[in-house]
Length: 126
Image (cartoon, rainbow, N blue to C red; front, side):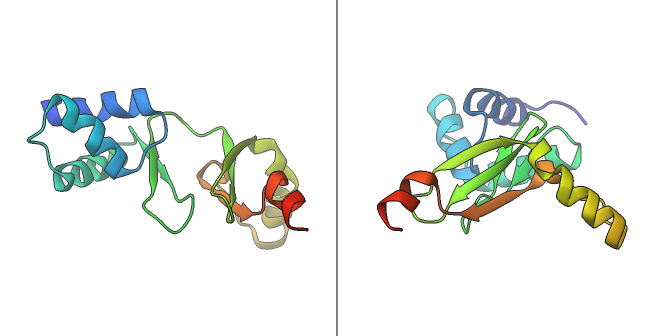
């Protein structure tokens, strides 16, 4: 595969944004190249993920969030305020071991978002 200008723009946008939805990537790319449309962004992200250059995570009910970096963390997403906290993957070690021992299942904890209530929202509405 050759590196087209559009592919490079998408990779560059993800390097700057770190975690971004396709819409956020598109807005970033369109600052430099207004003619690039959202369809091109989606197709490029799909291709780059197929080449293992980017990864996605679902942080909630919306569009997936893409990153060029290997996720070494689990996303904790507050379903009240939407705040996202990154916790080390090691917090999932016990669950990974249990799933492996019980079901022979290898969990990819780097591709995971857990939904719940953040500390601030919990304190506001016990």
